[in-house]
Length: 325
Image (cartoon, rainbow, N blue to C red; front, side):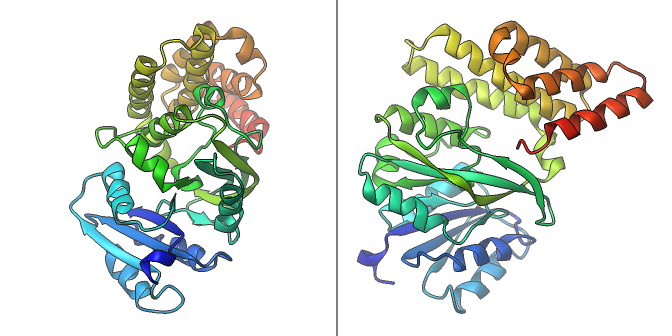
């Protein structure tokens, strides 16, 4: 594909993704929008990730659309930034090597950005799939078509890096991903993009991403994820000192509730209880209006019961959690 005709570049960071990379790239081959390129950055994999990518790059339907870059392991931010540097499209999307895009994702989001030059970032709702690729029934995403800076400070409602397509000029002006961050590096970038414009983010209210959740991976580093979020918010507060204290308190409370969930799933029930106490102390009224806060509070307190009773409470709260991602 000639350089001047590429409209969308999809950057796929990959590290030991051999079990999933074929499925991920196949989801891109099925896109209804065809004016794109894929840049896979193999971040020092030791499995057959690169071999699979090379095979797919040499065959239809991705021949001419797919390039592979190899680098020593530097982490996801480094890999994404390397992909951005190689990208040729006016729009750049990100797709993790174990997730999938639905066939109309590029077309739907590019149409929004073509219609409104003020939009720097678009996303969609997502559905959660399990490790084998089966739909769990859980959904997530922003509650409205427009995303404000306030919305994003309250919660990372974009949800996953695999969800976004961004104008390349916005990535250039905001500096891309911060290599020094190991966790919440995507949230850091979304906050910088939101701060750089007005009403510059939009969402398609339909699940167009399959977000693969592997439970061991999700819960293993909850304390590091907590530290990463607090580092990102500390950096953000240095540049947005005028934000209302109530808004920041509610943001911290929502984060504590989410980290409590991760700690609970990891079996650290004492940490889950402590985090839920913190959440209620920081923003009692918003927590009282949040179904997820009540569900997580019941789960955390249920862990104090004898194991048999706790098991019954655990089953009940998982049912209550229902379709929430």
